[in-house]
Length: 328
Image (tube, rainbow, N blue to C red; front, side, top):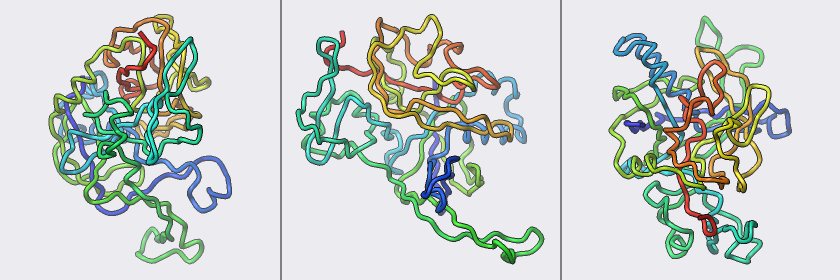
């Protein structure tokens, strides 16, 4: 199981990658904006540092290093980090609601068809809280804490510190994270506290590592019965086919789902950019035809894509059990 909580605080701006699809928004660097960096970025950093320090063999890391995220937290309360709100909860400024199952159909306890969620994240300590508990206070929920901004970035000459004569400026899509917020990842191996270059643009960040607290561990270790929700995107299938859930014969087929449109998923391993895939977005809810009785950590590696590297090592589809009315 994950043992360490790793916090990452950018020292200044970080950059969100633009998407691969041409559109009017992409002409100014905003189409398919991707932030925060996937867990693979931290996995690569840990492996890269180990090559110099040689604390562990590469084989040991290859077999036992698992990293999951991204999440985020208040810098003064990192253990109570924020995870995506499951789709069956609707938490908005003007009201709250929940989806439930009745006679084999999804129903909603709030009849306001215009009620749309205003919040995307909730603290891990409030994971089991029903939507009605957030009606009077929104202290345990939040929207994305980072903000995007576009600005002109100089393209410097290779051999001298001056802007190139032609095409010397290009539009960069930058991300600003408030000083009192930090990114959070979970890992089975520690990393020494310090400043590192992180992400595809190799920006300087401050990293701190501490033992993962009991609150998060209690949820992560709890067996999933019939219903669970993703807290990171789920990628299943092959590099040619994407599916909504593991296609292995031992995985119970979901009977009901609450999800959104697929998102693009791509990671870099061994300095090579992996082939792009589509992922089920975090927050998606699955109700299985029969109990699974296993925590995510106990899921078979054969349930995950294994082309090049098992995506279970990248925290693919990390999920927690949920309680939905109408599901026994």
